[in-house]
Image 1: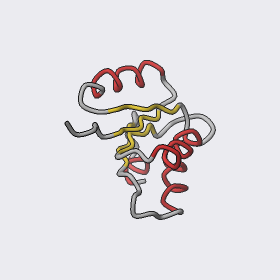
Image 2: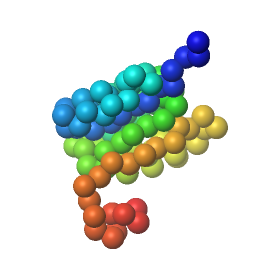
Image 3: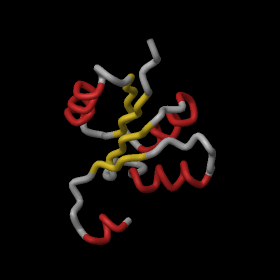
Image 4: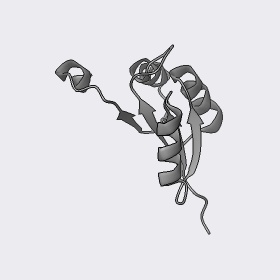
Length: 94
């Protein structure tokens, strides 16, 4: 049996974290973070296979967290999927 892939979910809303975790945990191992800074720390300490990150979080938002991660370029950088309720053109383009 192969090991499950590890997914980091970063969101400051407990209900969102719980819903995503419950949806994915049958097929993936899930770890969670509640802000961008915590997400960055977990990427470096746990090396997830993928990150699902909310754009709007307190302290450090998802865009800033990914910019910081990408500034330290590594061949093992996980792909990131953003979650957002923002619909403004500038937000979508960013």
